[in-house]
Image (cartoon, rainbow, N blue to C red; front, side):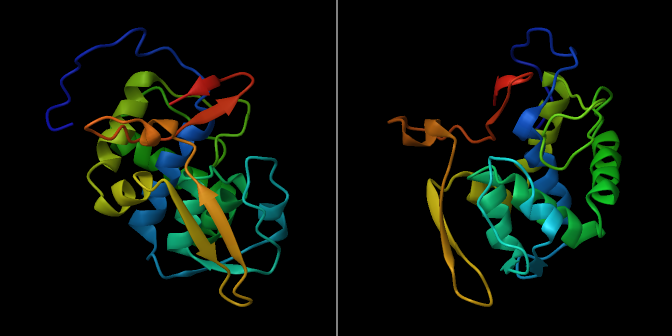
Length: 194
């Protein structure tokens, strides 16, 4: 991560569907443009996302910190859109911010079309570009702290409704002397991603 030295690669520049690994970039853009305690309002559009989702309801509000947990632990597609709208007003404008950041990080073969990685025409990345994105992500302790949580509970700010979360990264439960942090993803086209 410090010197960009490639230790191992196989087809690092092939463009592939990134699925929910996209959410690492979503989290980076949110963390650079919002505060963890900012209130995130849930729109109708956010609630209409297909699974994976955390079943947030229209009109509810959560802290940005809690929505980031829903995004990265449970891979909440609904949380992703709510965060995008909170930062940029629309998911489309937010995706523009994601692509701008990808270019600044040196990603030459990446184009995001959604904030959550759900299938979209013209959305792709490569193993090499995703490594550049994760390289940037590990610089932010707030992001690392969330990625290392096995489970959490988030609280709706108006009603106090609680939602339990469980990290999809099963490597966190393995008995090893180190943590393998990252973001899982799956779509039919992308297959299993990490």
